Length: 554
Image 1 (cartoon, rainbow, N blue to C red):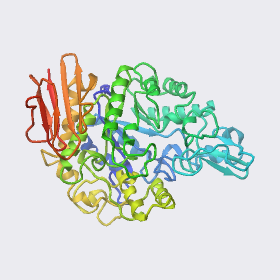
Image 2 (cartoon, helix red, strand yellow):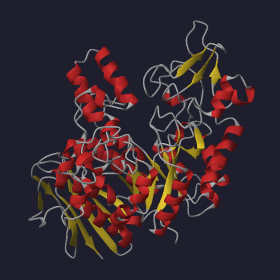
Image 3 (tube, rainbow, N blue to C red):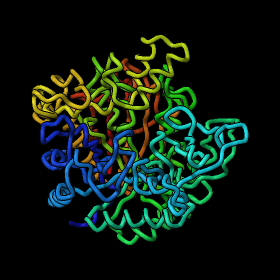
Image 4 (cartoon, rainbow, N blue to C red):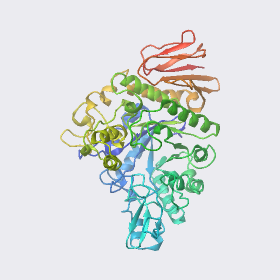
C-alpha cells in the first residue's frame, strides 16, 4: 500500500464498545470493527482511530490501562487485532491506536509493585509527603472532581492522579518510564500499526508542585518544562523511524505557541494536534457543567486564529467537532428537528474544507444526535454521574442537573452506532441489552437507510472526503477568513497555486443577508446542502437556514 498523505486523508474514529457487537454480549468488539470495514471503505476514510481496547478495569472506559501489550477479552484477542490490521490494509485503510501514557490503571503491574514498596517502581509515579496540617501536597483538583492526590497510609504519602483516583500519573522525569513507553510503541509498530493518537500527552511533564491560588493546578502541569524534549525523544526512538506513521497529540488546555512546536513541519515531534478551545464556547470559562448559549463570535474567532496562525508557523491541526468525550455536534451547534439534515451537512462542510486533517466520529456521518437520557440510571460515564451529584450539592434542582447532563455529558456520543431500524439499531442482537441505551431516533437515523439515499448526510460526507483527495487546494492551500464580523456566517477562502475556493456556511435556522464584495465570476458551486444554490444579488447574499456552499475556480 502506498504512503498515505495525511493532509489529504480523513480519519474515522471508532469507540469499539459502541460500534458493533459481533458476539451478542451487549458490548461492541474488535470483530465488530472487522465486519464493518467495508462500510468505512465506502465512506472513504483512510485511517481508523480506535479508542483503547487494552486490558483495563474500565473505570474510565479503557483510558485506565492495566496492560499495554494485551487485549481486554471483552473486546477480543490479539489474533483479532492482527486480523483487523491485515483486513484494513487490504482495503487501503490504516490503523491508529490510542496510547494513554500520562497515567496507568492502579491495577497495572508497575503500580502494584510501587504499592508493595518497591523503590524502583515507586519512582514510576509521584509519591509525595503531605503538608504538616494533614493536607495533600498541593491543592490541585482532579479533572473528574475532588483532590488530585490520594493518601496511602502505608507510606504516609500521597500519589498524584490528575484523572480518576484509579489512574495514577506516570513520572516521565524518570528515564526508565520513558524507555518502557518507547517499548510499547515499538511493539505495536511491529504489528503494523501506522498511526498513534496520544491521550492528554501535553500533561506528561510536570512542573513545580505548588499550590495554585488562581485555578485548579493545571498551569503547573500543562505544556510542562520538558514536554518538547520528551516528545522529540519519543519521536526519535520510535515512530520517527517510519516515515509512514502518522501521529496526533490530544492537547489539554494547551497554548497555540506550544502547538507550533508539537505539530511543526520540521520540529520532529508529532504530525498534528487536537485542541479543544473551540469546544468550550458553550462553557463558562473552563466550567462545562453550566447552561449557557454557544458564543458564535468566539467560535469563529478561535477557529480562525488556530487556522491562520498554525499555517503561518507551518504547523498542522487535526480538525473536528466530535469524539467520544464531546456531545453530538448537530445537537450542539445545529438543529435536531426541522433543519437536521441541512445543519449536519453544513457543520461537516465547515470542518472538512479547513486546513488540517479532518476527523469523523462514528455516527457523525449520519447526523446522530445527543442521547436525551432522562434518568441517572441510563448514564455510564463516571464524570457525568459525579457531576449529577455535585450539581445538586451546589443547589441546582434535579431537573436542572438533568438538563445540563443532556447537553454536556460524554455519554451523548457513546450510545450505540445506529446501523439499521431493527431492534437495538442493529448494534447487537434483538434480545441482548446493550451496555448503554440506544438513542430512540434510530428508526429515523441509521446507516442502512442513508446508504440508499443520494441526498443523505452519509452521501454528503463521501463527497467532502472525495473533494479533499481530488483538490490540492483543500489539503495544501492557505486560508483567509471572510465575514469576520457577521453574526451568523462562517466563511473563508482557500487558495493554492492556480486554485481558489470560497466556503460559505450559515449557522442559524433563519434567513440572513451577507453584504459582500466577492466576485464569483468563473466559480462553480461544487457542493451545497440545498437542491439549488443562491448567488449574491447586487452585493448582498441571501442565505437560507443552515445553508452551506463550496465555490471553486481553477
